[in-house]
Image (cartoon, rainbow, N blue to C red):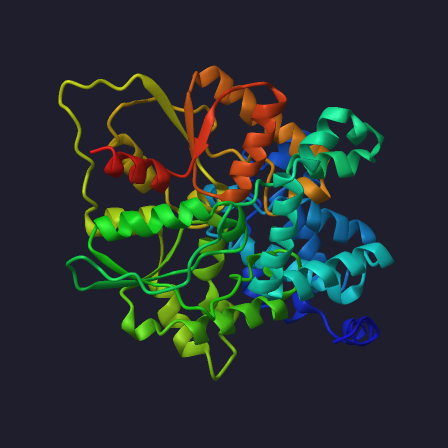
Length: 439
């Protein structure tokens, strides 16, 4: 559907008006979400709270408010961290509401501009629709980094002539992996467990070592791993940016790629991807071809830490006389702790690791400001949240920080580098893989 068709569609159609009204009525306006919301905490504006945004959505659904630029900007000012869902006593499905509101914004064209439309078409409709296109772009960036061009530009001071937005974006550029994730079946050493692994997008090109560590740990725990060649991006980037049709297309591709009936679980090691994949059933609930398979899929999706604890992972062995000297803390990615309600499992794994001493990270579940592409679209608010996170890491004294989401890892690494802090940031499964290798 092109832009003019979307405008005609929006004139006679509203996603919020079509939404089951009981979902909008769930909010009881108690205000328990307010202290948990990073944007409300920063602004103290009711409109920038979950309760305030739901009131705006309801006004649009009731026909009392137009889908204006102000409404649109507020819907995208939300981080989508879902801390409000954890705090809500009424069980409001805020994730469904904010995604629907953003579809409304895109249908109405409330934020349309030539630049924005070009960027959305490039990233959502072209780059992230094909793993091969993404890998090609990543390989170009790899040459830029390995040939020393990036380092030369940074040392020369040339970056200071770029617009601030470009400088901020360049600082977040991930270091591209030397090799990407191999897509092939990995047989089990001795077990009847068979799992599928979604390799992700940024995880594949910038954190391929995390995928390799995931495969190694699953092997060590007696799992056969299936990595279909046809698998695609999970669709979270599309869903969070008002492109539900794009998200549905990606979901269908993954459902076609994996034979879910032959798998005990579908494993994911990126928090944002896992949160999206567990909602394929809702995403495709009106699709007569895929809805049943989507229900099975959603029931079988597991975060890697969740699955390891579920099957009773093998705890790494160590010399009883050894004592942990490195301080280890854990940052709780929003879409793991709030989106998937997974908190105890990664901690159980991390606390089983020898040679580390556990330390609590203050406000461990407070958003770091990454939030998908929020640190690109709202750099000022993202920086405020990052500085808060970095100050807590400093106060904890941690030498190693565990983070289970690539976006969080990139954001925190950028903040640590800016402060000149030498803290190692690793995925929990990578730390477990290291412990297995060091036995």
